[in-house]
Length: 102
Image (cartoon, rainbow, N blue to C red; front, side, top):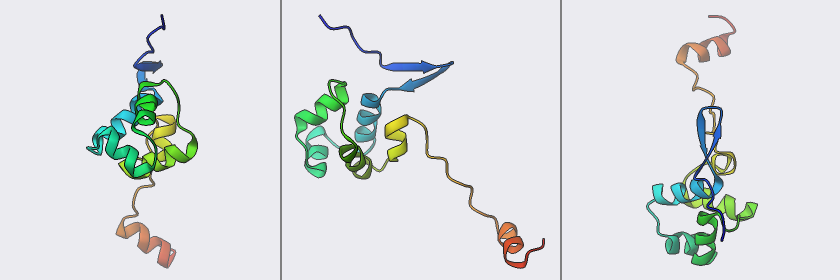
């Protein structure tokens, strides 16, 4: 009898979803079935099911394809950490950069 895997790992007081949960959430947020995703990324539906259940883990090429097909960042799929983007510069920031003065 196998032990059930935890749905969440906890870092401090902040829950962290495991890879299999992130894979499922990415697919569901893209409103794709397992079969649709499998067809798009070129793997079997069974592989999608195994990855989402945590029975096996996808290799990096599958993770890249999964991220592209579902519109999530590869970084988030791999680590659970959101991709941090630099804030867009304001017009004032751009003026300082171009003229060298504020």
